[in-house]
Length: 147
Image (spheres, rainbow, N blue to C red):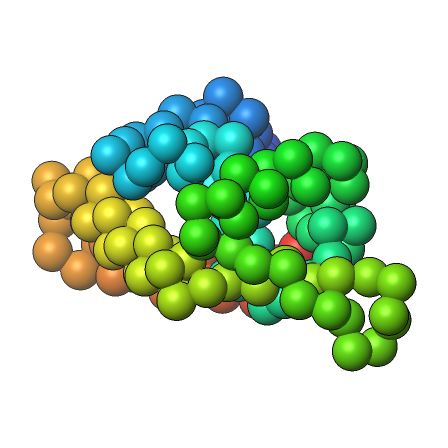
């Protein structure tokens, strides 16, 4: 029984974590957010918002790209005024990617869109089931195999 539940969760996570699944979600979220913000640049902007100012090299593993891929995407976001580069106070040779005010507003909008997208997908669930799922998912993340 326990292995069956584990397998069912593993299968669901496989679908959730598939690159195609993420790309489609990012396309939906970034629609009409401007030319620079799309399914390719979203992970970089989102990572900077989530973990704070970082170098392109440090962000690479966070977003699953190499440093040059992060740099290219960050340059697009910088040209759009969503990110800026600042000197790293701990390493004069490095620069940090930092959200601008415009970038912070974009992230706020993206988070609103994501929450609304998720909430809309749960409207047919019985009352309380979505809240139980949210609590269970949070517990799985904090106490499960990813902790």
